[in-house]
Length: 227
Image (tube, rainbow, N blue to C red; front, side, top):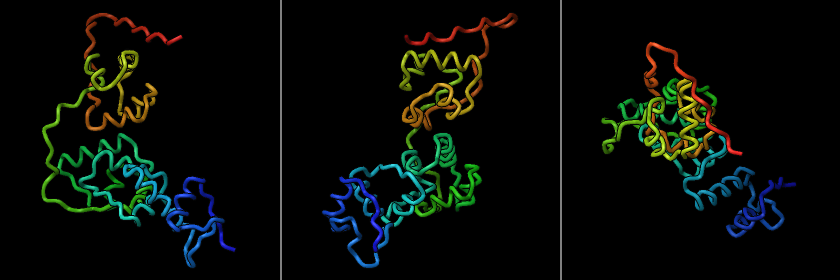
């Protein structure tokens, strides 16, 4: 008896209209596998949302079969963030390498650059293209990155922070400077979407020098929690 993969009602109706399944949910073409149905479902999702994030290595494999490719040495932050399991700090590093003219020639280069296990990189390989270019990508002049360990309130608010989160950031960095985007997101509990917008726009340099030279610095009061 043919195996009948579960599909949500909307997806089933879409696939039924495309002729991929029969009304009972069985696969209607001899020789088709469950993966064919999942690939068709992903194709429908990608048509509805071309920027869809892939949730697993299996979806990456299906996306590769459908023709989606990621050009490792020219990919944007949005491209990289579609891969499952990649973080903002890793994307930021890849963009900095790209702007510096560093080109990755294969999976081993990517594994070393990101310090990730080979199994995770292998899950991405179905969509990765390692093309070689003579010159680094040209781009318009970028404004200086905002040093989140030193920036003043107007700069922080300009990055999209509310007044409350700005005060919280200033208090937290006075306790201990932020190390990277992951540290910042963890300590401030910021939405991932906001942190991702800062890729390529912020940095984590030395903290501002204390104005209380020669005497003890008074501790900052934590921002008041909302009632």
